[in-house]
Length: 178
Image 1 (cartoon, rainbow, N blue to C red):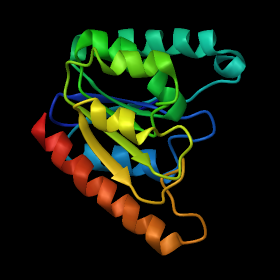
Image 2 (image 1 turned 90 degrees about the vertical axis):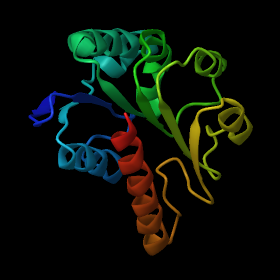
Image 3 (image 1 turned 90 degrees about the horizontal axis):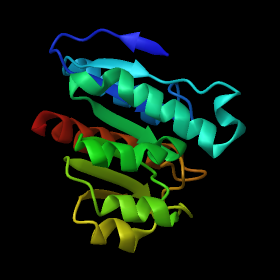
Image 4 (image 1 turned 60 degrees about the horizontal axis):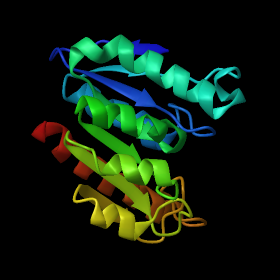
């Protein structure tokens, strides 16, 4: 885990994907946006043991959420990190879910219990993004046309950077609203 101290007394927890770590653009710049607004940020880094099974990931997620439970955190999860959705929903915490696994019935069911302010972000070329599920959730949705699971446009780095810019603008507005 890496911790960055902020100035506003708020904390955000970053939960990466299986093959998408906190030093990749979506999470790196999520941390940068949060830090620019005074948030402390705790980055989770999966260990090989965490990734042995889904139950191991769930155990690590529960542990990390419990560590910040008394700080009214914001949770930012990418792909595998979105397995935290039901626990975060139960606690009523705000969340930003980047490429949530909306092809999983358990996560679709968990969306129905979300009470905290939530932003869902996905791309139309991502096989785990189910646009109809996201839109039916009643939550704030940012859907990126042509974006894959990394929220990039394959073969078009300039378009990909444009999508990242769009995400950061929406994320900044979201963060300011909570």
